[in-house]
Length: 213
Ligand code: TMP
Image 1 (cartoon, rainbow, N blue to C red):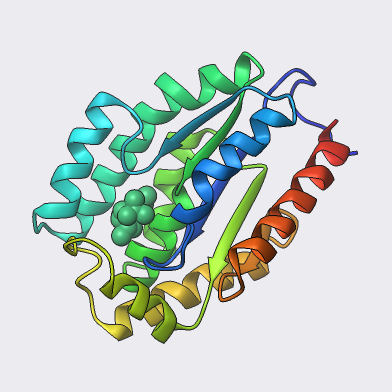
Image 2 (cartoon, helix red, strand yellow):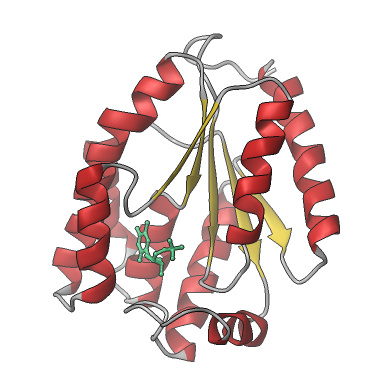
């Protein structure tokens, strides 16, 4: 059993992966499934998750800006999100499922845009005060497959318009983080069928309940 700060605290779960990896396909289902297992769950996302965060999301996805500004706005959205949504939910015992969190900053700004992790780490410490997800599902698949899936999506935002080298760096930064923290991350082979992926997520939820129960 892994100890938590308080036995009544909810679990903090995050979904990550490059654009087109398919995490959105599973988000609603995961929430419903967690609910069916008897947990109250808050579904949220980054950037966003609060009224201010959603406004920052619009700006971040549509307006060009300096890399440092982009990184700071990601953390501004995150600060609001943690204080107003994530921490209160976890404290009342709800589970939180967030579509992206800080691993995305390490992968996209740190890796994709090559800011480097050492510029991000101090912001992470300041904003999160030790808060980390209990489980991160990293949806991973070959870049060509992700690219084809992105091509089918609605009009591309500022990140989705990036080139192959950007997504290659982003993917590797994610995988590197997963390797460093194998107990938090679970890499999901997203090239498989929806059914197979859901079976894996379901089994992992059972593991988490056992681990933290
Ligand atoms: P989404 O389309 O998965 O909701 O994510 C919005 C975009 O924001 C996605 O392309 C990844 C990007 N992003 C970052 O670049 N850094 C971050 O810290 C977060 C949370 C998202």
